[in-house]
Each structure stands twice: as structure tokens, then as C-alpha cells.
Image 1 (cartoon, one colour):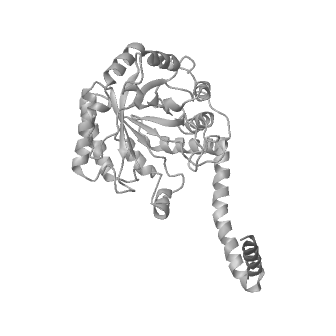
Image 2 (tube, rainbow, N blue to C red):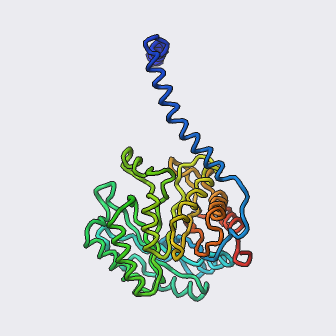
Amino acid sequence: MRAQLRGFGRTLIRVWRAPRARWPKRVALALAVLLAVPAITGAVALRLTYAGDLQDGTRTRGKDAIWLGHAWVDGRKKDADLDAFAQRIRGTGIRDLYVHAGPLEHDGTLPTARYPRAQWLIDAVHREIPGVRVHAWLGDKLATETPDGLRLERAASRAAVVGSARQILDADFDGVHFDLEPLHSDDRDYLSLLDDLRALTRARAVPLSVAAHQIDPLPALHSVADALTGHPKWWSQAFFAQVARRVDQIAVMSYDTAMPLESLYGGYVAQQTTLALEVTPEGTDLLMGLPFYYEDDLSHHGHAETVAAAVRGVRLGLGRTDRDRDRFGVAIYVDFAATEQDWTSYRDGWGRLDEA
């Protein structure tokens, strides 16, 4: 086998050196340059975006949120856990808890057996952490890239999702938070669902919030990604604006970016913060996600996607775009994977209420 490989290697070298390969080599080199230049240019731009001084006033406004795991409503968490959590967030800007109460069934319904301890949590939070709101975090896999999942194009499914939101609010949750993925840009059925949900939450005088995909860092990048991979990943900035106009809170999932370096990730978050600020209405809370977890795979490099880099990126974007915006915060993902370093970076970088 080794001899065959050596022979194949020598053949490739002869072909590459052959005079007739001159034009193919030039074409290959040109293609390599065409691919490399945009990547290098983008990396330099993100690194420059991460540079600069942080401005005064780019600290917590007391409108932060955190996604909490299902253990808080299924019976695994107890009074001692809540006491420790209350102590953990005391003095921070955390006001909203997105507590996983789903997932939804693929037809949009929600079995009540999925959140048996919800009333305990809601009562305990209101008692032990006054001013903090408990939202039901509902979600499901959408049938946008695979045959199975929730189908928003079906009116009956959308009606069932609204019914599940009504069911949650009847259970005394302070609001409802949706995370439906993968959600492609310009999905009109999703906008229709948000219109129906907003009518419900307005009638109940409670907030409606959603987790949002990242915004195209380059024009129409989601269309290119869709054509090449079938997974658009990003939303257009115009679609992000349409979603933001229909909700009370929009939380950008500004992680899983595939950035290999901390500086590039921080620059990317700064760019995302600017793009989101440009189109989020003043009456909507804009929250930028912080990665309180560590993984190392193609989409998320834990050594690069740090809380410290994300916070710095958020503050840079806020300071350059809309430093005085009040309805702004960060959203922490997720409680059960967080480390002490994550919490320290959040407090030190984003600040405490008594320092804001």
C-alpha cells in the first residue's frame, strides 16, 4: 500500500510539473486566491471590530435573562437549589428566567405532565427573588430541513402552538418564550404565528419573547448557505426586524459561530450587536446571547467562544451603535453547563446593578 501511495504521489508531481498543466495550475491558484482573500479580509475586519476602548455606560441595564434547564419544573430541583440560584444572581441584571417547559409535540400541543413543578418554581421565585419573571421556554424541531418536526405551514399546528401558550399562561407563568429551530429567513408562517401569539400575550398583559438566529454578516449570506448546504443558518436583517416588531423581547443566539479565535468571536458578536441594534424597535428588549457552556466541534470552539469575549463584543457594539439604549441586555445560555469562570466573566465584564 505504501509503495502504491508513493507511486501515486510521484505521478501527481509529474502531472503538476508538466508544461500542459500550466493553465490548469493557474486556474487552481486563482481559485485558491479567490477563496482565501475573502476569508482573510473577513478575519481582519472582525479583529479590527474587536479592537478599541469600551465606552462608559455600556453596562447592565437590569434587563438580562437566562435560559434554565428542564430540571427546574420536573421535580429534580428543590428549595435548596433555588436558594443557591437566588444568591448566585443577586446583584446582577438578571430579570427574566426562560425555563424549559417543553418541548412541544410536533403537532404543536404541550402535555401538562412536562412541567409538574412549575407552580412551585413560580411561587418560590416570586417570593425569594422579587421582580424576577418566570417565562415558559417552549420549542420544537421544525420540519424545514428534515421530514419530521413541527410544520408551521399548517394552520392547525399554529393554532395548537397558540393553545399551548394559553395553557402555559393559565399555569401562572409570567410570559412565554419560543425557540423554534431551524427557522429559515423570511418564513411568513412564523410571522403569522407571532401575530397570533402577540394577540394572546397582549390580552394577558404578559411578555412574548423569542430566541433569534444570527443576522447575515454579509449581504444575502443566508441565501448562499441555503443554496450550498440547505441550511441557511442566518436571517436577513430585514427579517430580523420583522420578527423584532412582533415581540416584546428578542434574544440573539450569538454563539455556535465556528470562530477559531477569541478575538474573531468577539468581533463577530460586536458586529451582530450592531446589526441587531440597527433594526430592533425601541419598544422591544434586545438581548445578546452569552455562551455559558463549553464544546469543541465544528460549530463551537470553546476556547474561542468565551463569555469574556462575548461581553466585550456586546459592549463594543452597543457603544458604537446606540450607547444610551435602555431596552438592552444579555441572555445567558445555559444554567446547567455554566462554570464559575463564566459567572465571574459575566459579573466583571457586564457589571452589577449597583455599579450601572
